[in-house]
Image (cartoon, one colour):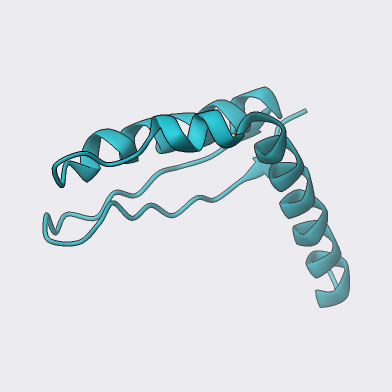
Length: 84
């Protein structure tokens, strides 16, 4: 598979995901996840679930890798493939 083809596929996938996210993330959602009293974990959980929902709605499969270091913010790597 040539590299340009792969880059085009990745760009199309990124565009699909960002388009869907833009349709579900609005001002009200952003205001609803405002961090209170330094409790960032509750907001992070909501955002991560929103991304999971977008992937599910698009029919994408993925794997999450959560950082084991509690001092870092939640980090997760996603390997996405189209399962349609």
